[in-house]
Image 1 (cartoon, rainbow, N blue to C red):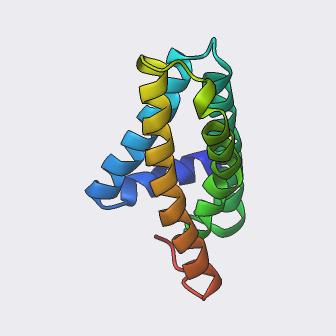
Image 2: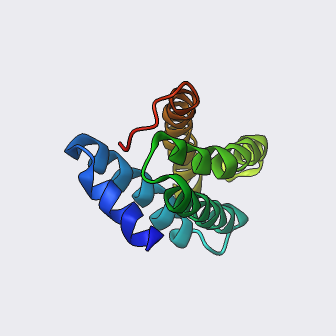
Image 3: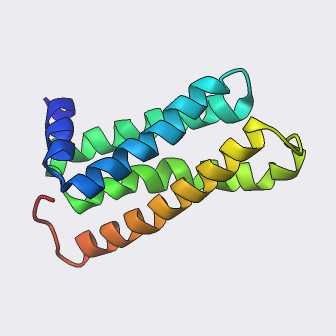
Length: 129
């Protein structure tokens, strides 16, 4: 099962990467559900679902390899662009604004890591992570 293989791959990562993945999920999923009544929350949860779908497909086709980053690039690139463009329309204070800032920072850092992983895969680093 690709989902099981994906989860096993996550568990096989060194602990700092496991902590990173957990933090990434927490910012996205917990925040998304906390603000589900807002378009930012719903869009974040949709982006997470799209990313997971792409990543499970990569695991099915290629295994737990650096190409997995493509899922975040496809889903979070547009999400972050949209969030940045609408940032001025958010309330000036409060949890929503802080969460969106955290989301942009954490997902933006993830996009850099993911882009580097995809480039490394394209350059021939195809071994499982």
